[in-house]
Length: 246
Image (cartoon, rainbow, N blue to C red; front, top):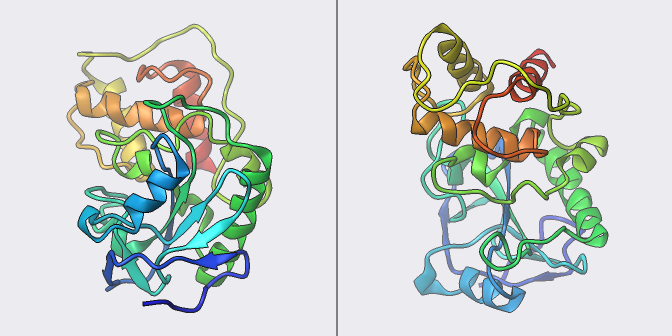
């Protein structure tokens, strides 16, 4: 069933059958990449009843924007995830799928015209829903053990310059104390507490375990993309500290 578009940036409504009652106020804007070989294949999957996945918005590389699910409805784009202890990400978020083949199909830079369209759409959504800057997130932020999109090539700094999302210029890569697999103790505990305070779902174990590495990797993809290796180097820890202060 068709519906009226929520944003003036939308060129066409292409209804997906995959949605249900929202049950919570949308206070997160969640960005994905499509991660499929073609835009046609991605759109077909997002509108196929048997796939049980969807999103609110779909942004082509040429800047055209489709709306698949009304913002008042709960689209099925986030899956299992968490942010700031909330677990039903679909109920709390508006999901944007940005066309890009992804890491498994020839990951590439996002065209300027596409990012300008994403910026215009995001500006409209965050203004109408009063979404806070720190709640504009990557899929990998809310599901760090499962997802890596929209990835380190996504230009979060450009969005932040347009008033969308929380950002500081990443601290430069330097040598120094780096936390890595199987490290234990108060430094690991401090890192875990800071990541959890920021919003990531992470138990405070004082052990640099697989979960901690996954979260550090997700943080780097979004906020320190120069080197994504899951190691908590001085650049990563200082960037996190400055984001928390901001």
